[in-house]
Image (spheres, rainbow, N blue to C red):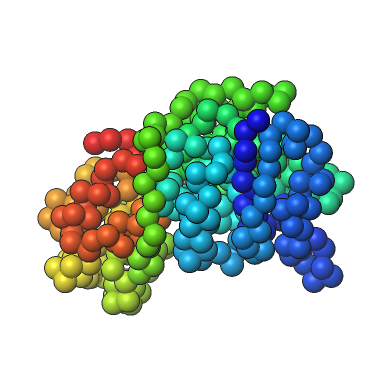
Length: 328
Ligand code: ASP
């Protein structure tokens, strides 16, 4: 029988009504007791790692989760991580880099309604997650609403419905139908995972709005090693207001700038318009292409803990990891 480690971190799935809002309070053991039928198919052990609303998650917690997987890697066939849905996509992306190329399944799940509610998606999501963790499904994935989504491609796109997550610019890895996993894509993996133990958290994100001033960008570059700018459409920066000068100055001082888009699907293509072309050709701004913003941020934190040298950062950024971007 497959041995699975359930790593609990909190989230709605483990929440109770407190009188002033839902808050996590149910243990990993408590979750299992409410879904009979999991144990018997697989052998489960529990790690009570955190009990957080995922709004409170930080990169420090991502490292804790990766550390827990590392410590226990040899003793289990797969891992299920229960997690709040709000920042689940960030954690899934971060784990894809921190535990790179895992031959064993690392499955994240959660729920939109607590497990103790009459109407809940918790039980099905948990059952599906254990099914996937006991299957031949290497790498990091999110199992939610009967879909299996690649860890680097997930985005929370609905705040209330059970179908909370979508895979962006990449097909689902599989679906779970009538308790059976139909796997469409198998992630490639190594013989052993490559664990990383550090992240550089001096990475910031600016969402541009019409009228944003360059002083915000200066503020972010002053305090960070890399700034991701979520711009419009296929990507570009306003031509007035000193944005090009600002980005150029900070790049000369060794900072990293990545342009991405606020549009969820199809990604950036900076060369298309005059507002983007120069950024790439003359200034050396990187672009996210088809990556999610969650993956861009996690990847930069991971890369910039290894190097701040711009050509090296560029090379690593454009090297696909866990199919986070199409190779160029
Ligand atoms: N606020 C919750 C969390 O992210 C939402 C959820 O789990 O669905 O922890």
